[in-house]
Length: 321
Image (cartoon, rainbow, N blue to C red):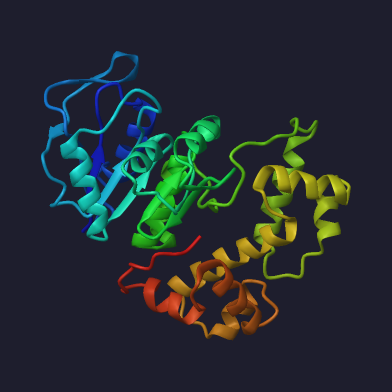
């Protein structure tokens, strides 16, 4: 069982805190083992959050008893971590424990020097300020979330849920992550490399693009021609490519590859088919092609992924981004 500290403070953002509580602190009786989470603060007494909400968090002086730290948000100006907080969070990371920030929470981690020479992101509206304040961070433009070693950072607001679902997927596998996503009425999984926002106007027939994606996901085992894919969305190939770039920061071909990797991961976690058969079921031409994409995207082979994430295995693999 993972012990999770959800960090809060005076005037914290209520939405991101709520996301962390919903993801990691809500009881899940259908799961035999779930996160043991507490909302904690290095400040004593009742805390006032945004919109005048009052909460009583557990006042702590140490993070030693926790193995995961969630930083839902942090002020982008005029607030600094106390000496105690700074010391405890740095020690937490030095111990190799996992830390995840939502939205502006990356500002706290960067302030403490924990993101120096690491890849990180935050809400797009804070991007320029973040880069100015922390030039030693390898800021990643326009992604939903990203990992570097034991630290994960996410973009603004709802991207916190995407990162949370990915954490759950790593710890408990696709089946459980999908169950939680359905309960939250979310897409089961969004890759961290997707765009934070759509830059083009909404189409006059927005449902066609969405329906074409749904069709593709249901036919991944087939050979999907990109021109035919575009035709299903009633778009020219050029418009279709541009829509994918602006929406997902991916080409249609790369998006299909990512969906096939996700499908292969689900099969590897839940079934015992041979690797060649997994490649066939997930739409790769052969096992060699699937291995290539697994190593490129995840840094591991399908066989190793299965050993880490199949039913009954210890799911501790840190998937690279």
